[in-house]
Image (cartoon, helix red, strand yellow):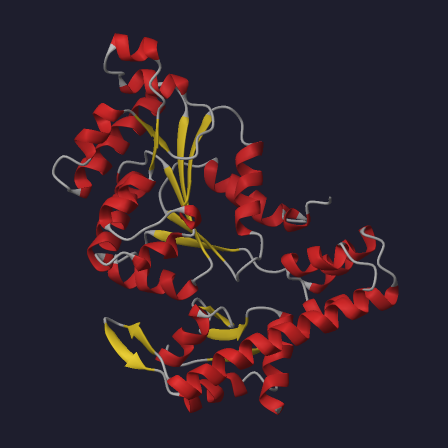
Length: 355
């Protein structure tokens, strides 16, 4: 099947390669709406990198994070200890680095892991990673650290201190030591804003938006996939350039029936969520405190999308946060604008508001 999520990502690929070709200086946030192809882009870039880059990629989506220890453990990939290794004893960092090709996490042995968790302090883990990356540099290669779905650390109860310590470590890797490139990917742009404020990242980070396809890119994709004019119009009008929805349209013959079904399902999902809010209420954590979400205020925020695709906001409210966390709207923090997560979400919001 056609690799749709990566279709025509030359601009973003070129930008990432340009970053990697320079000395590490800034943390790079890779962000965008849900299912816009961020992980697919990252994986493609990793596969295409020359051998002098050693990539340490950690996808937190698959990790259970309920504590600080869970997060620190999720960074590492335990090396399997063979019988020969057990007889030989403790491996050195140089030996670990020499065995690295492409890894899911940062390689570590049982002995080093015991050191990392010895005092339950992040500095032990960060100290180990720095020494490992220095060994990578000494071998003539360039370490690259990528954390995907980083918003999951918002579930860790030591959230504030962990964010501060983690990003100060990233600053040390990039701006201070110029030791490794650091990429952080997330679909939660409000989480980026939280990190920016808590970790004091002014002048220490850059942003790379990986958005849904624009109309020209989407229409070009439709042409390559053999859509007729009617199907192209239906696909764009209902789904816009959301890659995950376009995959769904590829697998069916009756695309008109499919887009109507997709809209019906999404409208029902949003309506059910808001009906539940109205009936039972809900509290969310916002700026360190719990706030009751006001149903009428949520509807007021959504009503701004009746006539406009993008709406400016003066500041983030608990209701906007609620809509972002439920993947109904996407906030662009660099422009202070809010929009639906997709064209399908926009149509569903408008239909729901008419009921």
